[in-house]
Image 1 (cartoon, rainbow, N blue to C red):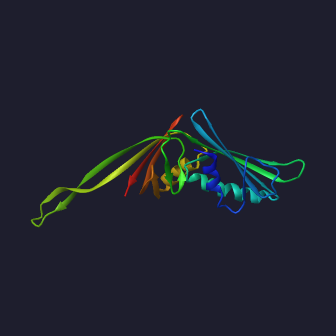
Image 2 (cartoon, helix red, strand yellow):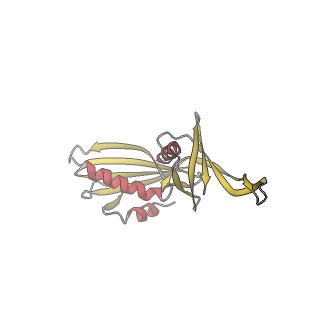
Image 3 (cartoon, rainbow, N blue to C red):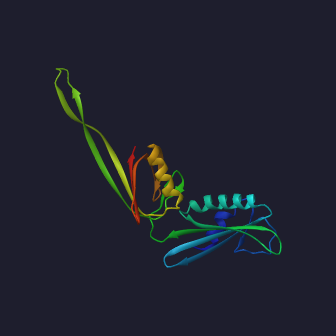
Length: 200
């Protein structure tokens, strides 16, 4: 991954995109920084504007753009430039090299380390023309089990918990392959998370 890729991703947004914090440019500006440390890609976005609400808008748009590359938010910090009074806000994003890329309703799920598919065929009880009951194979169904590191602040993992609580339909993109289903159960352990999704 190169800084130019991040620039190209942010360039369509309606604000001036700069490298780093670049205080020489007139606000509103959206800066970015890309680093690779210990197998983890780090992107930090820097918003500068005369209104904090505009900083929020810029970072929300930037987060959506970075989500298409499977980055997920890590931490956020507000501030004000002492000499100018300009509002600033920074947001850090991470992508671990080797993480499996999964989107849930367009939101990246962070920390996914593996997944398993399981096919099921349940027998259905039917009555034939002679009135005799018998069991016949029903329609096959599939279950997707996701395994991930537990990340309590990760938007994708929080979305899974929300969908599981309401047994709601959810759309997935798994390493580029789209699928839909219903989130059944999400188990959170001290250092991990497992989610079971019944696919359509």
